[in-house]
Length: 387
Image (tube, rainbow, N blue to C red; front, side, top):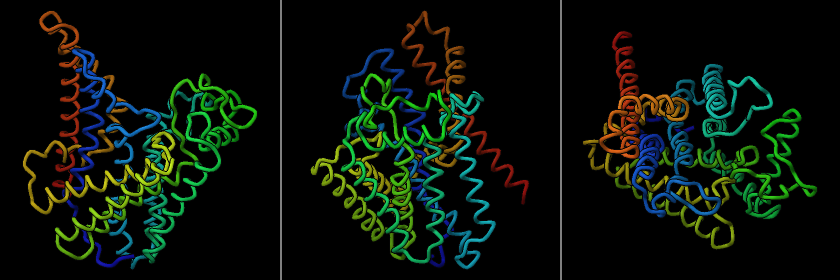
């Protein structure tokens, strides 16, 4: 464990987290509202989809969350370990496990059908919050290792093993990849008969027909090492920022790290490892992390080295209330759209239904921002009262 972990927070980390959240909860919905009103070119819409093979702007959102979770670990958990001489105590593990439980439960509420109270509808592991929980738990354990080599080697080993399993024990199709086979085997073992989380598997262990798929699905259980690797990339990037040296030196180190990840991803793709986000192939994961690191390089250079921060308040608001923004975006967005449609319904006869839909979306975004702002003001009030 490194000594003297800086307790400050780099502006770039919150800004980049906020940028990722704005892309998910503001830009994405607005793009589709504009398309429904007036139409957008296919090339633009493609960037806001998740194709089975390839890399789009929308594909970077989830890896970005995992990366930023890892980037927060040296600050949040580093301080806790430093107070106890670098050793985890009961309070440390209580904090970690409570956070993991909270993220896992919220994930099941948002996308796992937990509140249906029906075991046949339940999806025990199927969303971003749970991947963050998995990556956070693994890196919380690795943060206790005194050896930097161990903290680097374990995620790299997981990355390599998973990549090898995908490459040599299946293919990169929706129905023939090894991660999907394991997914269904695990679900079949832990879920009751008739569970909607389980899909039919063919006699050789592979899904027999794409018609059985219904929709493009992600894999989670076997793919966990990649979630840990992405969290580890964020952790390593933050430790580069905390290392001795001036801002320019740190920018160069981060840029080299990001370029190396991109080069690895491109090399794996050239060797036949396809870019598939849904199963987080090695080529996709390495390229995604390369772009995340380079985005951090740009954010750090602009906001922390140069010191330009004017006009970034909205991104900081989303960055510092990211979990609330995610929950609202995933769970309460239909309510906000209903309210937005209600307050803008009078525009229909003047601008048409399509343009009114854009106005309703903008109103919903305004309500989301207002809720986040109130939460931040309330937090500031709580701190003032506590003094």
